Amino acid sequence: MHSVLKPLIRAALTYLLSVLAIAAVLIGGKYVIEGVKGAYSAREQLALLVGVQVEVERYRAERVATLAQGLTGAGQLPLAAIDERIGLVTRELASTASEEAGELEALLQAGPQGYAERLAARYKTRLARAVLLQELGYLQQVRAHLFALQSRAAASAELSRLLGQHRAVYARLLQKQREVSQLGWVDAQRFERPWARSPKLDRLAAEVRSLSADNARAAAAYRTQLLALQRMQSVTALAAFTVDHRQLDQAVQPLRDRLADARAAVSRNWFARLAEPLKRALPLAAGILLLALAGKAGIKALFYFALAPLVTRGAPVRLDPARPGGPAEEGGKPPQAVTLLSASAVSQTVSLAPGEELLVLPSYLQSAPVGAARATRWLIAGRPWASLTSGMALLTCVQTRHPGDGVVLSASDDGLSEIALLRIPAGQALVIRPRALVGVAADRRGPIDIGWQWRLASLHAWLTLQLRYFVIRGPLTLAVQGRRGVRVQAAQASHTIRQTATLGFSTDVAYSTVRSEPFLPYLRGQAPLLYDRFGGAGVYLYDETPGGGRQGRISRGLEGITDALLKLVGY
Image 1 (cartoon, rainbow, N blue to C red):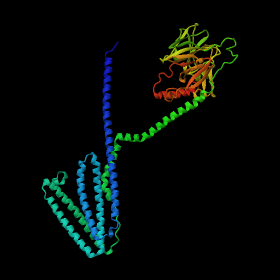
Image 2 (image 1 turned 30 degrees about the horizontal axis):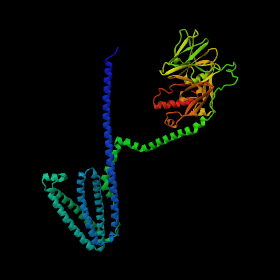
Image 3 (image 1 turned 45 degrees about the vertical axis):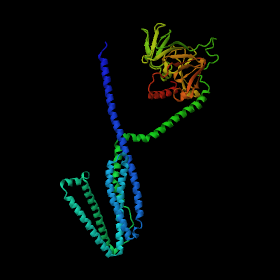
Image 4 (image 1 turned 180 degrees about the vertical axis):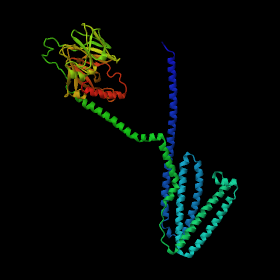
C-alpha cells in the first residue's frame, strides 16, 4: 500500500540536511575567510616591519661608519675646535628630541602608505640621538684630556666654570619644577597626560625636559672634568673611540620586539601554517609531476615505436597446428570445427545426451529437472592440479534421468552476464580463460582432457604478459559467460580485437598481436598498446563489453595489477 508520509518525511529530511549543509558551509566559510584575512594581515605587517628593520640597520651602519671616521684624530684638534664641535652636537641633540616628539604624532596620524616611512624615520631619529650622545661623551673626554694636558690651574678654573654653569642650570630647573609643583589640581593632571595638555603646559613641559637635559649634560661635564683633574697627576694617552653597540641596540629594541611579535602572529595563524609548507612543496611537487608525465610519455613512446614493431614482426603463436595424417583427416572427411551451439543469452538450456554429465559452478545453476542427480565434485577426475589451478573446483555435478532433459544455466549475482554454448568435437581443443568458464558437459565415462601449455620463447607472450594457456580438448560442450554477451567469429576474417575482450580461441588458430593505431589514443590511455589478431583456421571468442561495470580509478588500478599478474599464468 502506498504511503503518503514517506515522501513527505524524505522531503523534510532532504531540506533539513540541505539547511544544515548550507549552515556548515557558511560557518566554515567564515572561519576560512577570517583565517585568510588574518594570515594576509600578519604577513603584510611582518613584511612591513622587515622592510623597516632593513632600512634602519642600513642607516645604523652608515652612521656608525661616519662617526668612527669623524672622531679619528680628534685628540689632535685644538680646544676651540672641540668646543665648536661639542656645541654643534648639543644643538643636534636638541633638534632630535623635538623631531622625535613630532614624529610620534605624525606616526599616529599616518595612513597605510606612509606608516612604514614614518616608522623608519622614528627609529632613525633614535639611532641618531644614541650616536650623538656617544659622540658628545667622547668629545667631552677629549676636551677634558686636552685641559689635563695644559695645566692644573686651567683645569681647576674650568671645573669652577662648569660647576657654576651646572648650578645655574640646576637653579633654573628647580625654578621650573617649583612652577610645576604650584600648578592647580586640574593643570597638574593635564600636565601628566600629554594628550590633554594646553599649549602653555606643553611649553612648560618642553622647558622642563630641555633644562633636565642641560642639567644632565652640565653635571656630566662637571664630573668628567673633576675626574680629569683628579687624574692630572697621572695623565695617560687618550683611548681611541669605540662604538657602544649596546646603546644602539637599546634604541632599536622596540622594533625588534614588534618584529618578533609579528613573526609569532604569522606562526600562530592556522592558514599560514598550512600555506607555508604547501608553498615550499609546490615547486618540487610540480617538478615531480612533470617528470612523471614526461617519464610516462617516454616509456609509452619506447614501447610503441621500438618494442611493439619488433614483437609484431615475430612468428605467431600456434598451440596445436594441423598435422598431416592426423585423426581429423583419416576418414577423408574435413575436420570438424569448434561450433557455437547457442548464441549468448541471459540463460541457456543444456541438454545432456545419454552418458553425459554437467559440471557447473554452483552460482550459475538456475534449475534442473526433478529427479536429476546432483552431487559436489571437488575436482575434475583425472586432472586434479589443472582443475584446482583453473578454478574448476567445488563444482556441482548434474546427471539427468531422461535424454534431452534440459538444465538451465544463468548468473545469479550479475545482471550483465550472458552465457553461450560451444561444442568442441573430438580432435579439437580450445584455449579459454578460466574466468569465462561456467560449466562443462562431457561423457562421464572418461576423464576430461584439460591442461596448461607454456610459451616462454614467444615475444608475443612476453609483451602481452600471457606465458601460459589453459587448454581444454573435446569432445565436450562448454558454457562460457561474458558481460553483455559472447561473440564467436571465424579466424579467417583476420580482425583485431582488444586483448581485454579475448575469452579464448581454438588451438589451430595463428595467434599474434598488432600495434594499435594511431599513437595519440594509446598515449592518452584510451587504447591498449597491442591488439589481438587471429589468422588461419579455427575460431575465436571474445567478450562483448570487457571491463563493463568497473568504477573508480583506484579500483581499476588495483584490478589492472591483479589482472596482469593472473594473465601472466593464463587466467
